Length: 273
Image (cartoon, rainbow, N blue to C red):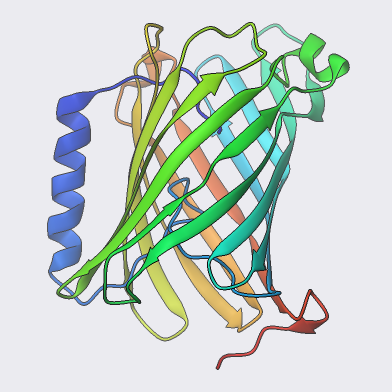
């Protein structure tokens, strides 16, 4: 959603996946995608449960600076295996010699279906179709939002292999009523480790490629989730592109925010079962 126009740096991407897997296999691990990572996992919030992620995400390049403040991600569970999602970022952008601009970027809305559920220790798959809605005319004029609509078609996989649980997500963006004519594909791998009952270390490698268009990019990041209380989880990650700063690809990206978990249609705080 955030990194349009990234390319397939195949050798570096595969090397990063292998090294991250080796590092995490050395210790007991439990990983899941979702904020603060870009890779999403198959899990849904559960019936009548709300998951609200409120964050700040800066993305710095050698010629532009972008900060999503806030980045709003709301997920609602319908039954055990269905999730409704709305994602809306408010952005501040600054470029060399250009005035600062702010506004709401493109909104995403969709439904996740966790159609293969073999439990925490088994193989899980979900599909998560979403619609990227065109931005307002004001945001389009400033470059904050893109025109037209697009369909996002991802699949999410998770599997626990011994002490390691991996989350893999891959998918396509397909232009519908949009002047953007290129399809786009993405792939992400997330891994992690529970250091304590409250603290989970996480990391991912992620690639996003507009077919037939530059630039090329693959990035990595690492961070953690810390459960202040069962209903309030602090989220953090930081990373950068594998490419040098002069490439125009992300020199630095990060996420800091809070995940709020609510039960019974948001009427009560989440409690551990």
